[in-house]
Amino acid sequence: MIRARRSTIPLAVATVGILLLSGCAGGSDEAPAEESPYITEGKLTVATGEPAYYPWVIDDAPESGEGFEAAVAYAVAEELGFDTDDVVWVRSSFEASIAPGPKDFDINLQQFSITDERKQAVDFSSPYYETTQTVITTGDSAAADASSIADLQGLIVGAQTGTTSFTAAEDIIAPTNGVSAFNTNEDAKAALESGQIDALVVDLPTAFYMTGAELDDGVIVGQLPRTAGEGDSFGIVLPKDSELTADVSDAVDALREDGTLEDLAAEWLGGDDTAPVLD
Image 1 (cartoon, rainbow, N blue to C red):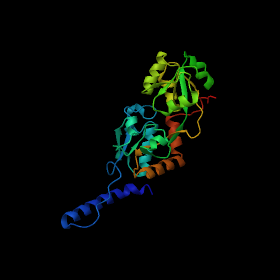
Image 2: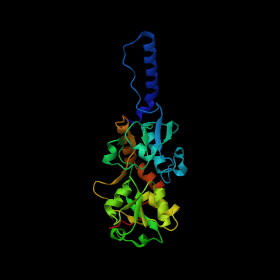
Image 3: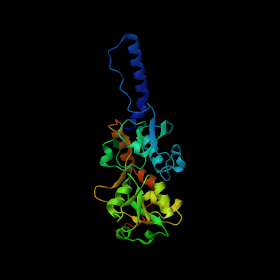
Image 4: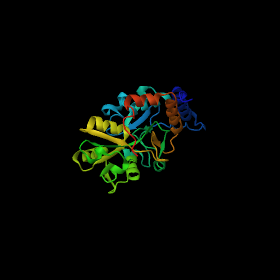
C-alpha cells in the first residue's frame, strides 16, 4: 500500500541507527541498510521549470500548490504518504530533465509528453493529462480566417523546436515552406506578434492562456486532430530505472480513478470545447 511508505520512515531511520551502532561496537556481519530511493530521505524532491508558467504553476511559485502541475505534485505527494511540508521544490531546464544521466529530483512535472524516444533516457509515470495541439494566431493575421488544415499549409507556421507541437506542425499541417523553429514559446509568440509568422502551434492549455492573457486580439484557429500512436499525454518524469516509478504511477492512477485529476484540470486548465478540431 502506498500510504504505508510514510509511516515506515521513522522505523527505517531507527533501524539504520541500530545497524550503525552495532557495526561500530562489534563489527557485525549484518548487511548494510538499503539505500533510500529518494534524493533526501523523508522528503519528496519535485522539479519544475525555471520559470514555471501559468496555468501549470501560478506566479512561478509551486510551493503555493496553485496551478495544475503544482496541485498535481502535492496530490501525488499525499498519495505517496508525504505531508505538504515534506515536498521540496527544485528547478530544472526542460532539455536537461529528459537527457540521460543522474538527476537531482525524485519527480519532475513540466508538461513532458510521453514518447518512446524520451523513454530511452528517463522513466515516465502513467499520464496525468492528455491534450491536443492547437493553432493560434492574431486577428490581423492571414491565419485568422483559416477553417481547415489546407488553409494553413501555404502560410508561415511556427513552433518550439524539440516539442510535440513542432512534430504535429510538421506532420499534420506540413507547411509548404516547412515549420519555423523557435527555442521557446515566448520567442515564437514574439514572432507571431511581429508578423514574422502567421500562426503558432502550442498545446491546448497554452493556447487558451496565450490568446486570453498574452496576445492582443489572440485567436484560436482550432485543434489539430490526434494522430494514431502520437497522442500528447503528459507524464511525470523520473530518473531512468527509478525505484519510485511504479509507486508514482500507482499514485497517478489513483488520482485519475477518484476524479482528482479531472477536478484539478477543470479548476486550473478550463474546458476544451471552445476550440474546433480542424479537418
